[in-house]
Length: 282
Image (tube, rainbow, N blue to C red; front, side):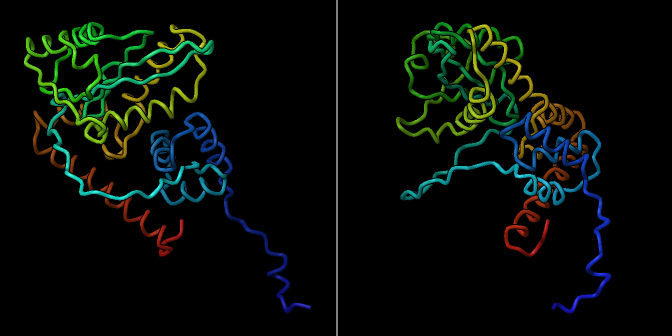
């Protein structure tokens, strides 16, 4: 027999089970399969939920929503050279190709572009064949909204073509080529392509090229207008650009916004580090 107080035996917890929050969290996680708890917390706050990150972290794990991440193999590390990072939006873009297949097995290609500072994706071109002339045609269409000073590309045949070289010379755009076999030289577009693969290509079954174009364009707009980015202080690319334009007209306000964004990121990292070390419970 255990010596147990009768009040302890009959006690029933009166804590709010957070049923509505759990249901909404699971709905968001089902719609945004590759979003972790931090991005889901940002989406919930946008909807008006007055909750902190620790509660979302606890419910996220209790509901079994954790992402299954592949463990990286340990390789011999070499001395890394820091990448040169642009200081303003529309200063440097990155460009690359992605491959996928339709439901009937036919392969198609995607030409992806991303701004290395604001993370805005100006366009994604989809077709069965994309050569140097098509790359130039896409950049010509984007000329009205402004061209960057530099575009980072790899050594693919489309990017070393005479057509693209002549276009870059006419418009004063510098083409910076990555070293052969070193995709980390163009890390921003590699990260963008990984998000595109995980959140769009792997989650959809394309019946036709038109279906693929519509779905990918909808994802691109969602990426620019709705998806929070940890590197931007959980802002969307469009919000970051709007804040940046405000700093050009009101430098003092821009400094305060930047300082607040950095403080939020620092607090979030400290909380996560404490949770991992076991000194703070979610």
